[in-house]
Amino acid sequence: MKYALLIYNTLEARDSLTPESRERIEDAFAQALASPAVSSPVRLAAVETATTVRVEDGETLLTDGPFVDSKEFLAGLFVLDAVDLDGAISVAAQIQGKRTGGAIEVRPLE
Image (cartoon, rainbow, N blue to C red; front, side):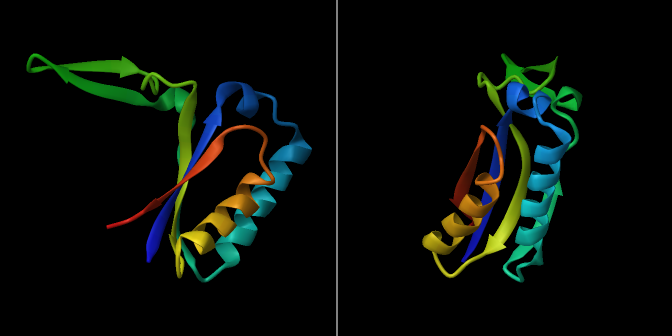
């Protein structure tokens, strides 16, 4: 079954990364990508480049930034082919264990 690993972060955690912690995170991503189960990694551009689209009363409203009423923002995602949810959680835990803050949401794909 395919799962999406949706990687969330906070601005505070992102901005406080040291070069060493950035390297540790890059290593965790590289290890995950080395697995044949992982496909379609996507790293999103900086959160400041986001535009949020809403439609209210038929009018399209644009807002600069990822304003979805959350302190965390979607930073990237992996598509993972795992036998079951436990396998997907294992990969997510390996990645999250090298990060500071944020979270990884594991969601089955239909």
